[in-house]
Amino acid sequence: MSKINIYTKTGDKGTTSLIGGTRVSKDAPQVEAYGAADELISWIGVLRAHKVSESQAALLRRIQECLMACAALLAAGDNTKKKLPGISATDIETLEKAIDAMQNNLPPLKAFILPAAPPAAAFCHVARSVCRRAERCSVTVSHQSILDENVLIYLNRLSDFLFSLARQFSADAGIPDDYWLPE
Image (cartoon, rainbow, N blue to C red):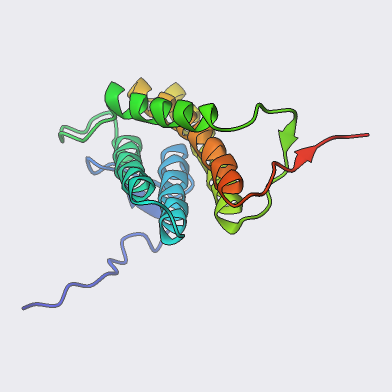
């Protein structure tokens, strides 16, 4: 079996290829956006590595798959002819149902929450912040090229899901929300 090199040297001068072959600078908006999605995929992996229920682990894995689809859509140039996976209304509804189920079991919000223990909740808040960045970068891309609107909707909903999941992890650990109450 022949050896496959992980390095190609094609990006050594600060450029990379989008899906479809267009070369762009590594600081181009599309690269920033799919890079943020890639970072988010890793943070979701950190959450999966914590002690989570089987159903939570399955949902987190599905979220990673959807984020891979978002990243592919963000990495596609307008001229790509490749068939890419997408984000469906069902993917968005899955997040909404999960959010609703968690919110039904959590106390009403009283103020902004400061991220804290348990560790899984704190990691959810980090993932939520990265998700918001991915969303902001994706909005920039949407102004410059065609982008499936479900990418923006999914990222917006995912940040709400991660916020709710953080609260759920805290509640499951018997730790009340740490509210920011400025004096």
